[in-house]
Image (tube, rainbow, N blue to C red; front, side, top):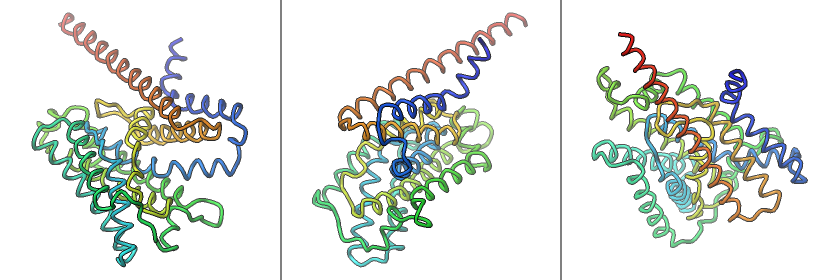
Length: 327
């Protein structure tokens, strides 16, 4: 029984992924095809890039609900610059820097004021969405050059979509940061115990801000990929992405309380969300029902995560109590 329990705990996400794939393979004709598989991976490229940066913020104990509005703002701002004659490379770099600046501001506002991350970033989400509707006039921005579309629509060797390659590279960079750098270790340290990190001589505030800066970098890159994929700047392009990203990270084992989670789990969580969205689409399920399904998945997964945290705390309290009695 204990062995089975350990296996279930270790491979929960993979088992969930397998169940979802099998369900759609049986119930949705056309799901298990090479073309649909490539389409699925291309669709989750933006989600995967966003989830990589978001995971680092969550591991450090933070949260950023403004990523959806950042996505819309940066993609529209970059498209507007390109259409007005700014070289594509320069426009993309400026777009990424805009996302970094916004995320850095979020981090500093949270750290310096003590404002809850959820409230701060939710307010920023509204502000940014208002800004993007104002400067675009709520109208899409068209006219991107053909060369700019390669990032989101191109193929390597005529087979593998470019967004998939970008997503895989981003996953590898994310894994390297978390597993092989001091910065990644600092994120885990702050998320696990901010006070202990501060007492050890590290600046927990600077580390928290850095997690938002890194997140901003990935949001900027995701914005460029999204803009290129839809070949335009859409004011509402990012709406709803924050919930998909949160769900993917939590399904992948990133704890809301911070300090826990691995990049491999995030990859698995992104695949689960991608398969769920793609499978429901292939089955012809309407967008409202898809929202319902995604919301239920998030509710169930967060409930399981909270119960797991509660059991872990209870177990630690019991061990501590037993040690005190022994002494």
